[in-house]
Length: 249
Image (tube, rainbow, N blue to C red; front, side, top):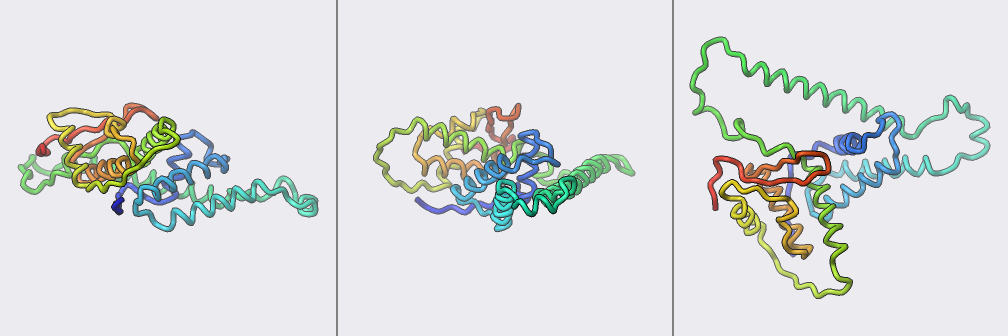
């Protein structure tokens, strides 16, 4: 199968992914269940690698850090250390990570507040509104939807497990190279005319190569702002539709 390298700007770093998992599973940031979060984090990283997405080495460094913390919490302390150490001041292997996460969350919330203030301030003018349409860009007027890349990865994981469960134990696989541009055009054709489709409906074929190319085609269409995605509720079905103003194929 052809190799595709897709870089998506939605990746903000390993701490952002950890916060996403903490919020998703509604756990206390000061009492992180390291085993559960580590397993989920590694699942996301493995999925990124399987899809051949361009991920930074810092994701792998964080994976190693989580595994080290998990190991420290699983290994029993030596009896001598337990006798010498005051239980009230027992060092928690998670302390440094928690401090980094809290600080990152603080800066992220501050950035969101500044962005809201910037948006509010942009609505204020010192003179009557003027026609500035010739200076505006299409990106300023529309968005790609409220679905994050993490939501897309989670949906792909769910789809992969479903296909794997239905796949026969023995099968003959024929390797066929599928140009990503062809899949992008096919998806555009399915969405033209204002039609909405469920994310799962795009995977009409169970072939692994077809699934990966389809997923990467959707990411490229989101990146080029040809399509938008929305999700009504957490863990709900992701809907994909063509953005207004885009020419049909």
